[in-house]
Image (tube, rainbow, N blue to C red; front, side, top):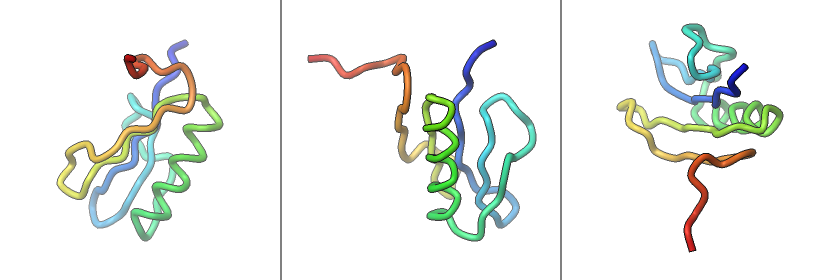
Length: 74
């Protein structure tokens, strides 16, 4: 089974987290800060990447907490 990352995103006036590939949110939060903290906790527990999207849906930040598929070069 593939280890899918965690995504923090905004939808219908709420910040949400979901496991990538799932259609439903795992949890919701009042603020981006709260959702981001919970998304980070979820990603760390699973050892996967956490993708944080901006209000407009574009990717704002990515953090890896496990096997980084694209490690830094150098």
